[in-house]
Every structure is written in C-alpha cells, then in structure tokens.
Length: 317
Image (cartoon, rainbow, N blue to C red; front, side, top):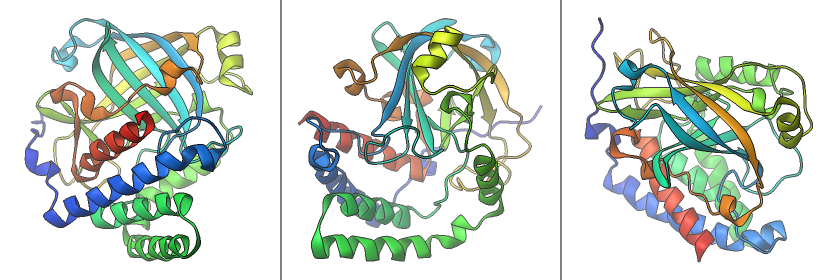
C-alpha cells in the first residue's frame, strides 16, 4: 500500500512581500464590497465573488466509508447547507457564464464541521502568489474605482495577466477548458464540482469532488429542478496525495494523476431555501472556519482566509 503524504505547515508559507500584498488585497475587497449597493443598484452589500445566488438547499450527508473517513466526522449522518452561485463579482441575470460555484457547509446542529467552496472546474490558472494577488486587487479596483484610478487598474491587470501566461498555458488547463466549453450548456446542477485546491483530511492531503448521481432533463431554474426531482443527490469523492510530483500541493494548474477518486459519502438535499433571505445571505463558507484537521492547504489557499474575512466584515459593517 502506498504511503500518503503528511500535512506540513511549510506547504502554507507566505513570504513577507506576499503578506504585505495580501493586506492590500484586503483593502481592495473591503472597498469593493462597500460599494456593491451602488454597483448593483441594490440596498445590501454582496459578496466579493460569487455574488449571485441561484439557489440554496438544505439536507443531509451520509458517510458510507468510515475507514477512509478516519473518524474525522462525529457521526455517519450530518446536516448540510448548499449555496449555488455564479463566479462573478457583480449580480447577473440568469446563468451568465458556465463558471459556477457550489459552497458546501457540513454541520452538527449549529456547529460548523467543514466548509468546502467548490467550483465546476478542477484546476486553477495561477501558481504565482504575487501575480494572483495583484490580479485580484486590480479586478476589484476596476469595479469600484473611476477615471484615472480605473485606468491604472486596467493597466495593472493586463500586466499581471501577461506575467501569468506561462502558468495559464499548461496542457491540463487546455484539456479541462475544452471539456468545460463542450459542456457549457449543461444545467448548473448537472456539473461536477471540485475543490480549487488541497485540503487536510486528518494528517493527510486530499482534493474533493461532488458528482451528481444522475443527469436527466434540462431546467430553467433550481426551483423547477427541485419541483420535478424532489431532491438533489450528489456523491462525495476524495483523492489522496501520495507523491508531490504526481499530486502537487502548490501547483494548482496540474491535474493529479495516479490517485483514484474514492467515494466517501452521499449528499441528499430535499429542502429548497429562499436564496435571497437574510439568513442565506449572511452565511459564511470560509473554509478556514472548518475543524483544523479539515482546513485548506497551500499558498494560494492560504490567501482565501484573509479574503473571506475581509469580504464578510465589509458585508456586515
């Protein structure tokens, strides 16, 4: 049996320069979120990313592989909340782009056990922390600034995107980009959803995938889907890391190989929530609010904690 990689805090290390730029990102996020009522012509503040909620569901997760689960969850059946959204800073009408997010919250009563923000694309096109931070800063600035400041953000965005081109030209990204394009007209609940990066699974390291149990029919809305199907059924799979060359922790543009997906549970959501309700809008899916041995791992992942906190604080202020 192959030995699994063991979590090491060095996977998460950021340099002093990167930490300084991360603080700049926090300022940019807070500035944008504070302006979202004017940007979107609404009377409340939205999230920094995935602003549009298409649906929110409630149900159960049933773990069916306790050996693989390693006792990480307190019981075989726990509550779950799902938030299905669009990957876009502004509110959009309809299914704007085939770039969707599914945020999964696993709870025991009112206690959050794990948050998993997932997307319908298994890879991430940035490997350089500095360039990714600067791209995110300039995108927020484009939406929140005007005049010369907006032009400066446009120029800065182009510079750091060009600097990131080598990582974006990797073959695995082209492969999955083609698959996404081919499936661009699939209904939002028929996609597989993936963790953007790596997570702890106790002392080990994993990637996560949700896969719908069936893909039958097309629907105009999540409400119609739930009315016809009565429930949303997806299987939860994980991949373990055994070898950093084949399953890299900090190179998110490369597909993991030689590591099979292992089914560990099933999610059944049979309750449709109001996606615009104050309770749903107030939900936080920060993966760093998970139990410590289920949290994200890696340099790019490390940035998300600060970004989530900045966005949430600005929404609540």
